[in-house]
Length: 367
Image (cartoon, rainbow, N blue to C red):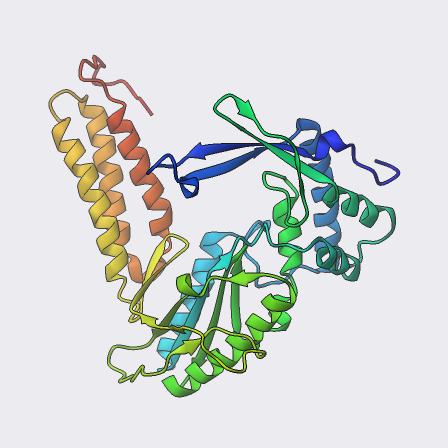
């Protein structure tokens, strides 16, 4: 390691395909899980701590990146995103947002480009050589149904299952904000660009220009965007008349004879667990949450005869607090719904694990 060399065994991965559902003969219905050496993960944690310390000391990380960043996360991003939309509503503005779907982002990372960016950030000498060796000569094999394939090399991408991979990807897209002239929100590979203006025409024109510059950056960094899964939404006050007749073209500046499929507008979009309506009424998200609550309340009703009263009261209290947060407080902190959905899943898990011959006393605290 002092010579900047990582043993081959620590760069070898065993890939196990896990069945997700559907037809078993369809490769798309399997999720690959990569298993790496424990010693490799110990080394990667040390490298990650060292790199984060250097990045924090010199404030090199983009402020627009919320994923895999200490002190930030989905809730922070959703709060900032919601605040910007609310601000545009207060100013009677139109906010056009483009939600980009990046295709196999972590597998598309070019090692050459990544190392060049790491050098520009200040990682040089033996440490950069160690990172270069970490990316090179990686290999993996597949184990399925008692059989194991031969080894094959990995020429691009950051290693799946690696502790260091999320940070390396963040550094790979760290300079995206320099190419985007409008508001940018990043959560790992989830990328949103947002334009605000007093009218739809100006907001859309600004978004189209920014989309072209964003696609130029993606093209230069060998990252592909799935246009069919990319979504466009226009946030505006329902009392403000907006004629959304324009269609956004997702292409780079090199696209001369354009035949690109236009990105159509949508009235609601799911972003990091929350449904955003174009008029910010949260009706779609509330309907989604209430549907989950009805399913749990049905389970609660069906188990009322054999479930201890103490357990019923606690589960009921959880449900009532969830209903309160998503109906009475949505205009204050709508992002609490994300945490409450986890609470609902916990309630369902508790109900499903209660046996029909359960013999608990009234005062048993199962929590």
